[in-house]
Length: 348
Image (tube, rainbow, N blue to C red; front, side):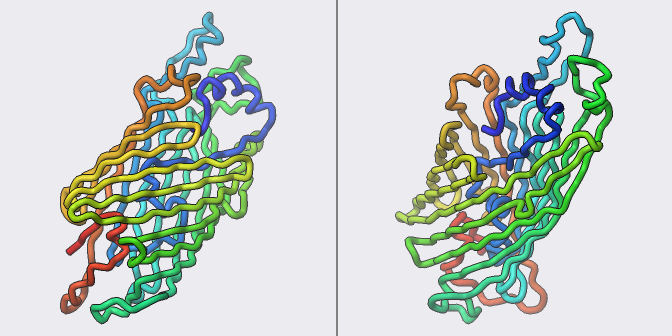
């Protein structure tokens, strides 16, 4: 959970008087399919161009009730102030899959505060282990080292604030924003013959810990985060079990996501995930085509103190489409051992 909504409202005046606020990274229930958001070394992971779309709607339908603190005042009620994250990414392999590149846009909204991240990623891949059949030069193990570079922007919509003291010069009355350079680093390892596929990665986001000033009045501190992610695949005939792990830390605490999905006949996917001290999630997905996957998740809040704010629940929708771009004669059919099988993508 990023922030208790009641605390967001009650601490609003404190927020402005302190002139500083720590900004938290967004989270996703489909973290195992949206790894580029955490680790730039994942860029070009599959030997295809992949486009991902994701929307995470936390506490859907939550309304602004700040007017309750000044019932005599006339003002507007604002809907859709729930935390919401939307993301788009594209990745592609280059140079016979020895280099990966990616680009992503993330919009993370909490109340009337919106953070936007633009990132370009590059990953250098080192082939390890045994060579796979097929004559492509691919090996059963890969170690990738990656970096991303971009911009972090913070925006406040001051037109929607209902301050206790109208005209307070410390509270903006218009839409204001600020931005700074941002970057991250990561390493990512895959082993296609360990179990029926294995991956693990370690990364740090917001390496420069940018401090963004908005309207010369408020400073936002983008905190560094360290991520460790891992997952594997275990085949049992037409059934595949896909356990996954994500560990997240900003130095002030640790959050752990632990889950497992089952995939039937490379088509139907279902599973569950547990987020420490926060939520239990159910996941469902389906391969409409071998290279087009749609996933949905529903989070059930595990903290009783905030359940009254979560009646509509937390919903997430994930869509991924992968395709090849071939120039000239078609390449030979690729071998079955391929890292994309970790996610179930079968392009052939």
